[in-house]
Image (tube, rainbow, N blue to C red):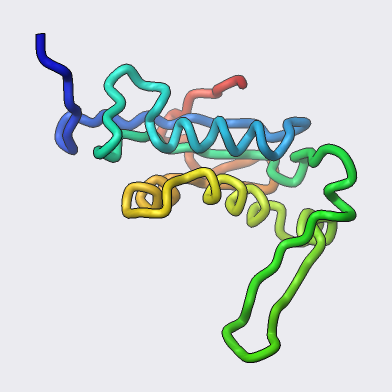
Length: 142
């Protein structure tokens, strides 16, 4: 008996909707990364991009446990000398809740071409509405 190996022609992509309301950021990111990579499928092949599309709604209602809203900080550098910027997650959740979710999911994807392709299939919305009804996404509980 031979081992099944998926290839780009045999991959079948589905659409899933994850509701982030009341869920912790880490649990949401793990579930999204698993769906984006295709690890929930029987036909998962590590060297092939066999993941699905993921739509995350209610990103503004995601929960951070403990005192992370006050203590956790997001850093980025502008490229200029001495221009290290920092923002608390509490501020970031008020201004850019979609970015917080995207950043968490991106950190759980591999840092190669497969991870970048998977990240392009992630769609995050701050509210309950999304514009992907035509694809008939399936609601997924986690």
